[in-house]
Image (cartoon, rainbow over all chains, first blue to last red; front, side, top):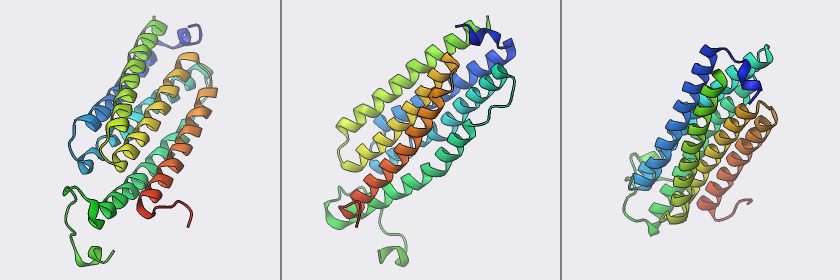
Length: 122
Length: 93
């Protein structure tokens, strides 16, 4: 309780708004993970939380710690850069694997057809 | 005053993140196919990382940041390994 009392009021409002925005985006993304129907739609939902949700919570953490320790605390940028770089990589790999599994035969008919001849060779 | 505002927002945010984790766990257990479960696991990692960051803001300690960084790294490696397994049937060829 004690360390947060040193924050100025505007910083408290900004931190609260950013944390609520990030958590809300994560919740929306995870609810979308339940409500969407096929895998290829579901793969888009959690990216809402991993980009803007993580970004705003990390920004709130940076602001809070920078003001509390009265020096710039920037190491949250590490997590932000890492999450931003790795999320598209993992999702591309997963969708590639799902496409491969759907086209190899055990598919449920929800895989999009091959788009070009170069893709069909794989 | 500011402590009250930030604490209230953090409690609400933690409840929301816990609900989000519950949604991903539901999809992970129910998911009709393996790739649904892997996507849900990836989202679960990210939500847990953000929950730890909110705990860190609340306690004012930097230890939670290190844990969140470790969770982000391990989540990426785990998801890539699982995607490779779904693709090839083995992780290390």
